[in-house]
Image (cartoon, rainbow, N blue to C red; front, side, top):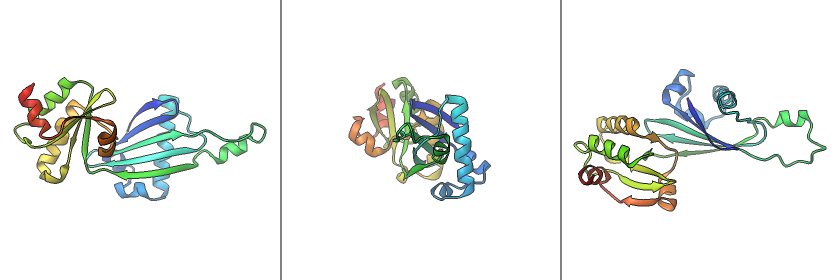
Amino acid sequence: MRMERLSQDKIRIFLTFDDLSERGIQKEDMWREIPKVHELFSEMMDQAYNELGFDASGPLAVEVFAMPAQGMVVIVTRGKLDRDVESSSDEDLEDEVYEMEVTLEQSEAIIYRFRDIEDAIGAAKMLVNHLTEEGRMYRYQNQWVLCFDPAGLESSGYHALIAVLAEFGEVTSVTPAVLEEYGQLIIPSNAVKVLAEHF
């Protein structure tokens, strides 16, 4: 389990499938209200407090993104408490510790971000002999993002792709729709081939 702070009121948590299986949780369980998932969430909030100083009291918005082969990304946003100062007692606050709104999204796309173009080129050079007609590249929030549709990949190519991308970049929770809307499309197709041959 790895976590990072995105802002004062928002954190991102990466859960691998190993993190889930160690706790006896299947991917599908994240969509259900079961004690094991509540325990996992409590554990995540304790770790977020210890590592990042993120206090999870008050209303929370929780977004869960399922990523193929990589695991899950959980984004937790702390809401503001709307109450008068007089009526807020410790008891009232206790009741709201895990009042949360959960949004679940599943993305089949394989999306990795790279801090440096050199890292993306390095990944492309390792992949070019296996995947010549795959990938789109975007520029999004000062990072380079490679996006792949897993539909055309056999399972061996799929796992090799994930292994190489994980070596050079980081999985990201951004969705293809967000990239289309807010990212800048740099290479519309065959990104692996273009990067490997032109750089």
